[in-house]
Image (cartoon, rainbow, N blue to C red; front, side, top):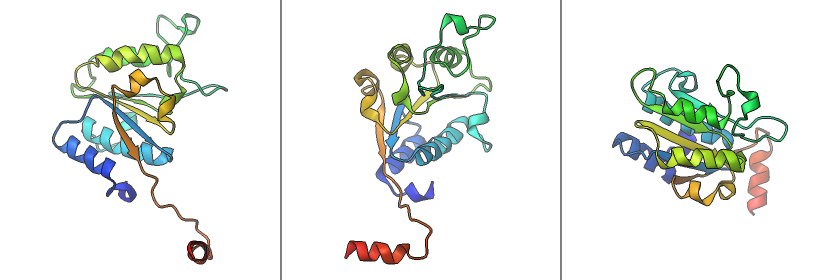
Length: 182
């Protein structure tokens, strides 16, 4: 996103991507989920070499918290349907990442609100993070990086994304901020 183009984290990510030296595990953390998503969309588009929405690409696998507790669960035997793990479960993500890429290129795994993994799903993910399948890049997005297991954080390249300048669309906003700074 243009608002973040000059931030150090984005510059490092762009340079790493251009030099084909992007790590396999990347932790993006910041206060704005929209900014984190914008950055991961841009990187995923480049990795998957697609002009369309990378989240719709067959080699992009996404996991988000769900349910009332908004947790990322491992997936239980009782939820299996015809031998398949339920969508939006850690077991399903891990299995999907182990498969060959549909289009023969790279694969991207994205975990939104990664701090919402329960202990079982975090431990299941750790093995994949330690030994990712060939050509796979894993992104963890969170606003609370210290709620992740230390072993997960230590195996990722860690990027803090600064909050972009946000203003309020009100006619008196500029005057108010000026008065506030005085």
